[in-house]
Image (tube, rainbow, N blue to C red; front, side, top):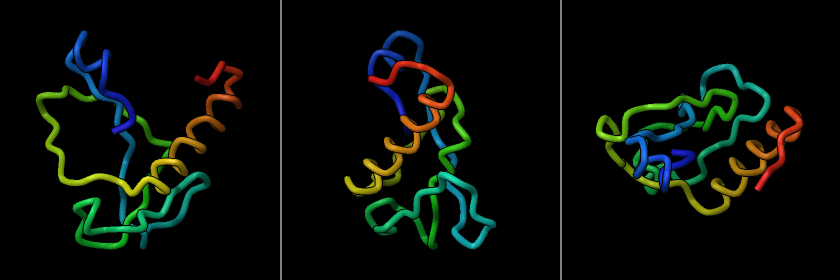
Length: 90
C-alpha cells in the first residue's frame, strides 16, 4: 500500500503498488523485497513501482509489511517518478 490515511478515511480508497514474482522480467524502478516472511509472501518478489492502482479499502487484506529499507527504496522510486512528472514531492 502506498497511501491510506485521509484518502482511506474520506473516500474508502487505498493507493497500492503491484507486487510480482522476481522471476518476471525486471522493469526500471522495481524494488526487491528483502524479507519475504515479514512481507507475507511465499516466493521471491519485487514491488513494481511503475504500477500504481486505486482500490476499495474494504477489498484489501493486510498480509505483511515491507522492511523499512524496502519502504525507503519504494519511496525513493516514487519520488523520482513524481519529479519526472514535474510535481512537488512532500
